[in-house]
Amino acid sequence: MKRYFQALSIVAPNAMRIVQGMKTLEVRSWQPDQLPLKDLLIVENQHYLKHAADEESGVAVAFSRCQISPCLAAQ
Image (cartoon, rainbow, N blue to C red; front, side, top):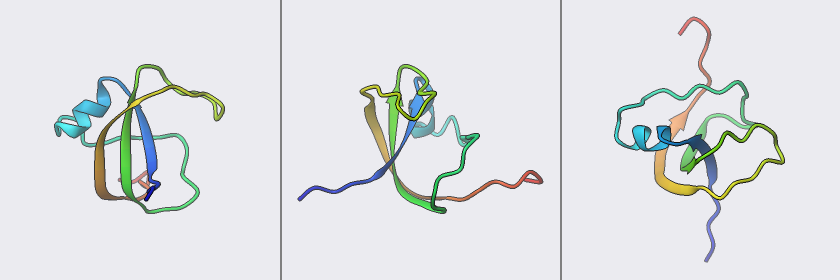
């Protein structure tokens, strides 16, 4: 049975820093279609994916059972 997950691609070495607990905040300039995000696959890439059509084979480094919500400017 196949399972599908939402994934967040993060440029190396920051994905591993998240896994190791050294990096605890990831800020994006865009907002996903649906919030909060839950059960997120963290994928480490070697290059920034700047456009929707950009693709690169990354490595899955963690599966996070977290809840990601928008951050307000006052936070």
